[in-house]
Image (cartoon, rainbow, N blue to C red):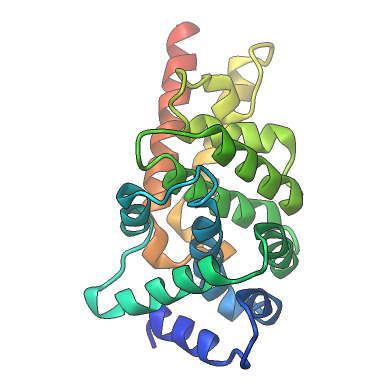
Length: 228
């Protein structure tokens, strides 16, 4: 059964009048985390798309850059987006429900992956609105992500200034090159598609790994060149 068919099943299980937040409380077991991850990204994106007062074609099309969606499965993705957009529940309720889904050692990793998907969509139209920044900062807070973790993810996606390579890797200039190299290698391992899928990121969203690895490797190359 495809990911999108499983999403259709999850939505069909909603009782009359239930919103998407009910889905988040049901999809906590590891086998269904990929379904939960996908619904979470699309649902929060639908809420975020209104944060700057408009929904652009680029933001909608960004879903295709995050997820591989076969033409036959577009209806499932559109249904999640529309349910979230029309749901009376606010994004904070969604974020809290999503945070409850992911527990254990991989929690910060998978929620960081999810934040990466949201940043990708937020910046898809070539602009990054202050309201979107406030939205994402609040989501990260509800997720329990640390401020350094949030800044690290933001630096890899937001192009309002040249990204600070130390922030991207979560290191400081005071650290030795060997320590920074170790942090870079750990970041590369964490962004490996196999690791991401183990955390619950679906195979259909592995494009997120590509962008993250580019940012991580670029940061390391810049730091290494400064210390050559």
